[in-house]
Picture 1 (cartoon, helix red, strand yellow):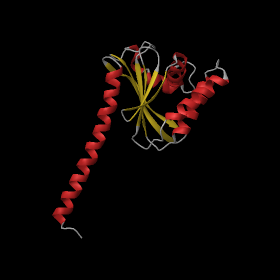
Picture 2: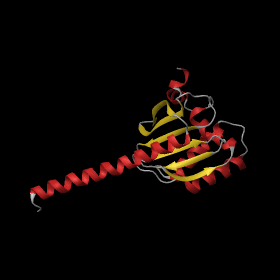
Picture 3: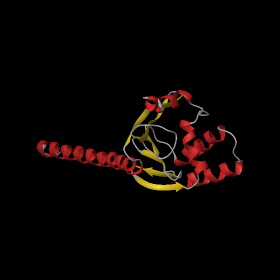
Picture 4: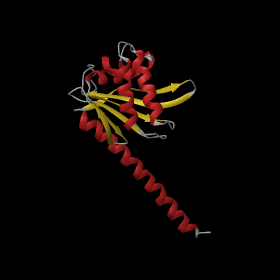
Length: 182
């Protein structure tokens, strides 16, 4: 058994190191948004729950919080449970399919691309999608770049999962766009 004062010292430093590591992740994800979206501010946010499971907290950012449905903007998902990257890609493809008007070959191509870089996530991990000024999509995992899709139709459909009038979750869309009409 350790000396109580040494044990207290170690616990204090372990907690401090954990907080420092977490704050570094928060800072890195905040930097992604501020670097990609000029004068980024929150448009809206909400917690997505599937049946009884809290899945993620989502935050939509746009320049000065002014949503115009045109890039640049960012959508940040902070996961509240562990999920595989493969399942995230599959669900994204399924939701894009529900919007209609796409060839299956196109969806399969996008699915394959997302599966190539979407990571497995654990609670408190953050995935950020950025719709760039050029209309492309860049993805970040805990502040680190993981991949991109240089296709304006992909950008429209991917973010449409949450932001389109054709979303399968209109109440959640309303939360994300809550500040759009200020």
